[in-house]
Image 1 (cartoon, rainbow, N blue to C red):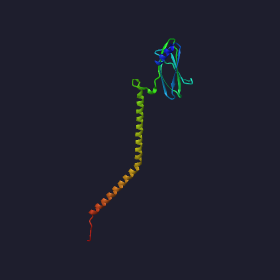
Image 2: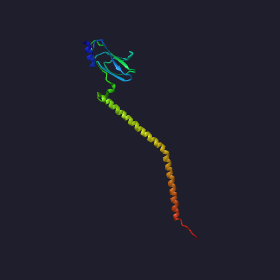
Image 3: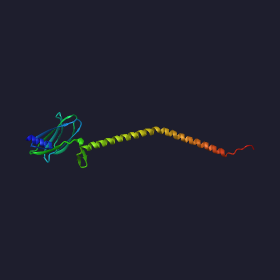
Image 4: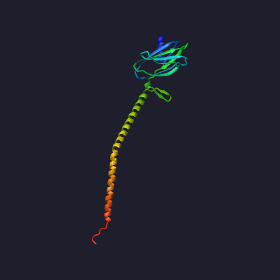
Length: 185
């Protein structure tokens, strides 16, 4: 009967711990992924939460009555969570282990929509790709402008000299028209 009670409490994320009792839980964790553990003791005075990796190395020891713990393991394996009730009376211990990849923080707290993260991720990736394309366009345009500067300068000089030549020719022809030709006498 006691096993049934503990299994119901385990799935409800709520456990009652007897005085000076220790509860140990294990959770499978993939390497290099964020792990989040939220706990609350509902007003108990003293509790100790300790996290261990597969090699029984202590990841962290926490003595606050409630908290949010973030950790990242370097190898795939089990994360051991040990909760010790240091109170002389029975305490309630509540906890959650939400999936960090599927949790979005909104203005009023976490948003429980699994598709929102995937949608936001795709929007972000599309924005990054469009910005990269725009930067490539700007760089190509800049390269074209820098290469064409010398040709533009050459064409402007050619136009100036051609205009000066045309003006000189017109001026010379206009003066010839008004010159008086003296023939004889």
